[in-house]
Length: 283
Image (cartoon, rainbow, N blue to C red; front, side, top):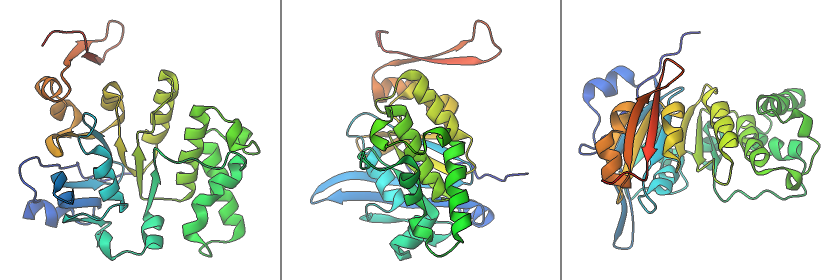
């Protein structure tokens, strides 16, 4: 299968998309934003974000604490209403959609998701089908849930209570619920929080294999190069760098925004490059 994917475009100093890009790629775009910003009272929390993402693109949102990462994700997913700018999903204004219409296109895995510890894993994953009530037969619904459990490696745990799962297993259950929702766009807010290094890598590898648009807030910079196709770096509520990971996550940007050093080194045993974030190096 040939997949046409529009490279993400995020602009730090220009909050408009070019007419050529807008016209040529309009049918490829699954998620777009223009001049996005959000304020509360007199405090400007986020400003000047424009982007266009295609099917299969994976965008990492990174930045220091308080930079506006979760705010941007909430604006893009419809959890917050922007005070400036607008968001579109598959060519439709997000503001014009009902919650059910939005839920049929998007799924959100948030930091604060705390499912009842007594609910069975299979029943929890079935919750993802609520936006699609009466749009499929019962047999089709069951198959979608079983597929989600299988893709996340949870089939053997389907009868277990959510409270009996490890941290990594609970995160996979949340991903499975999102997959059962059959979204075009998947939003993840710090999905690797509280996971050990192997569980983090396993979870992001699972997400990277999905043929959906992904927007993820990540704290672990070292996970970004292998996971994301594109990145936006936020500082004080503004995008200071954006685009393909290798270009946008440059040494100067990492030094300026995070106060650490970045090195790209040849792997000693494989034909690939290692990206190393050095917190001990004097700047």
